[in-house]
Image (cartoon, rainbow, N blue to C red; front, side, top):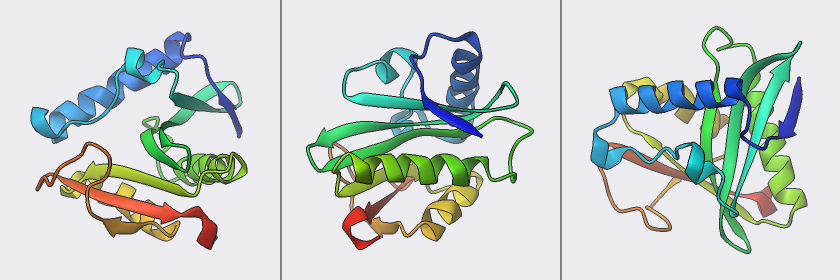
Length: 154
């Protein structure tokens, strides 16, 4: 799998992100939807990765810098038809390694509390993320859970 920083100019990436946003709208009420759209992912504080296998886009992830030691994981998505093949694990491992190499000490994320998001929560737990209080600009929300990982512990 080729995982690389992406400039968000390709149609395949835009289509995958639109499908991601559609799923978030389907499974999260509007006030609890925190996924970034294409323009927000182009912000200077965001780094976006796409994952490719045999020339096909299979997934993506991003981080948003919160401060000099803390990033937020955003837009983790595996393309339909590629679930349960290790795409999410590979992308997450890549992003965590990049965060550690860049000197970040903490990676945090928000995801849904609903059953639909259980596979994502399980993946994060397996990578050593722990549930935490809301961080950054988030507030308590019954539709959200918050997880964090201290990179100094791994």
